[in-house]
Image (cartoon, rainbow, N blue to C red; front, side, top):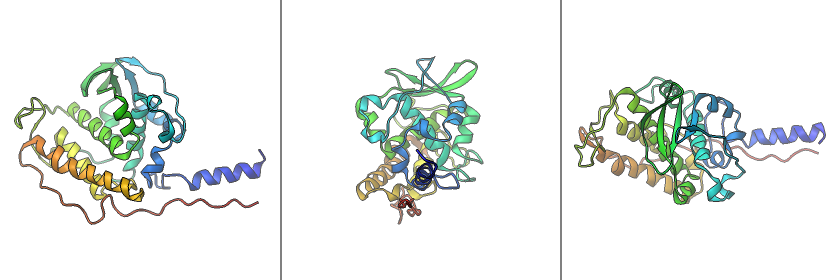
Length: 272
C-alpha cells in the first residue's frame, strides 16, 4: 500500500468515527457496530476494569465487525461487558453536575468504586466480591435472546444502568421489601442521596431527555421509537415502582427524545 492510499484510509476512518472530537458519542448505532478492541481507549478500559468469570481472569474475546453480523453465540458475555464499559467511557465525557451522586462522569465514579466486573455463570447481579484485593460487582451470564438484544442501544443501556446500580451498593445502600418485592425495593427516592434504583431511574431519565446524548435520535425511525419507548417505560414503570416514598413524578414524552441529532460524519470521496 502506498503512502497516499494509506492517508486516504486513515482520513476516511476519522471522518466515519462515531465519536466527536470532544470525546462524546454522536451515533450510538455506528458506535455499537464496532468492536471494543478496535477502540483507541480499549487499553485504558482494560486497565481500569478487570474482567473475571466465576472469579477467574478471562481472556479478551475475539470480535468481528460489524457486530450486528456476528453469530449470536460469538457475541460473548465478555464482549458485551466490554462494549458497555466502552459506552460508559465516552457517553458523558466533559460533562459535570449531571449526576447527583458524583461531580464528574459515570466512568470516573465507577472507576473510583470498583476494580472490575465478575461474570457469574447462570447467576444474577450483586455487590460485591473481592478478587486480588479489588472490589468487583457481579453480573449474570446471558442467554442467546439477551445477547442478541445487547447489540442494540436499549440492551447496552440496560446493562450500564445495572452496573451503576450494583456499584452504588459500594456506598452502603441496602435494599428493602417495602414495595412488595423481596429485597427489591428502595425506601425513598431522594435526589440528594440517590439509592441504587434511583441511580438507574436517573440514567434512564437522562438518556430519554438528552441530558446524556449518544445520538440515538439519529438512528432509523423504528430504532428511535424502540429506544424512546424503552427509556420512557424504564422511568415510569420499571424503576419508579421500586420506591415506597417520595416517588419520582411520572415523566411525559419529551419534545425531542434523546436530544437533537448532532451533525453526523459523512463519507467523502477520495481524491485520485
